[in-house]
Image 1 (cartoon, helix red, strand yellow):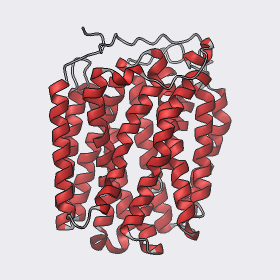
Image 2: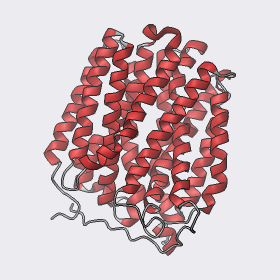
Image 3: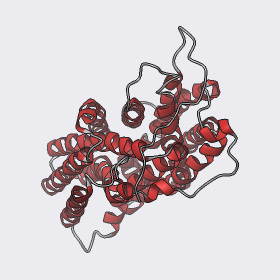
Image 4: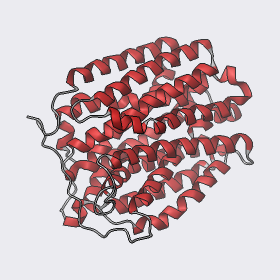
Length: 415
């Protein structure tokens, strides 16, 4: 299937009044606090293992159940927002985000609130990724932001994800280690940061073409997902971006806990911050690496993830916290370049009415990677951790070769 160049005309709407923030700031903030919600739990995995004595399988299930809330939200929310508008769906995502933190604040009482809170967190992040990122792209162009360059929306969306995830993990880890009420206070702080956006978000202009034009019905079929470039390039690369993230700052801190001892929680927090901090810092470079004539950006990302996996195996085998930090930085570079390049690929090939849905499919595929630690925990034994990490590295190498074979084919606007 060939695809024409997707040029999305901006709906008519008011310019931001002089002296008032542009609409994209509010949408950026809403995506930021939603991603904060999704990742604040990650460094606390070590805390739950040490203080409540959960085994490794249960800890990794806490990480993986998040995907069960996230994947349906990614796949459904985009279609609903194309018909009913970005604003009501994103508002529902913010409500889910606040409900998640309120539920996780009771995590000390047992695993039930943790599973429920993680499920709600996944739904909140799924809506933010599919709906919030599309909305952010749309308000990052004329008439709402006449100074933004092409591709600005994708970079802002990626930055909101990486900064929100990184700062959420940092705040939660620091408060859990050194603050009072370590199992409750991180979630209370997130609630305090999130609630103002419930008041601000309804003031952002609606941009959904379906809502503005009165398009009837909700379409869940997505022809753009069958685009040969999406299937041969984007879908192949996407899962390995977050598989690398989950292993770098979700799985590796647990493996290194015998070496980090009582500093396990700060160390887990540090790995999360290093991974996502580097992912945010490389995004100006990602803009230069990406090109509309090939999948160069995704190839660079997969190469970095493969290198990061080899370093993960070495760090786990040697029980080296220092090597773990290097691993986080390399993996962060791959994630940052991959997110920007993947979103730009999606935005180039998506027709105007399919942007939110195709963005949701991209993130749904990417977040499948978060199941990797749970799958590895289930296979250990009979296999060793090192053997499984090398097997995952081989799969990433195979994905690299598949993308390389198709990286200049089926370009949007091509024959």
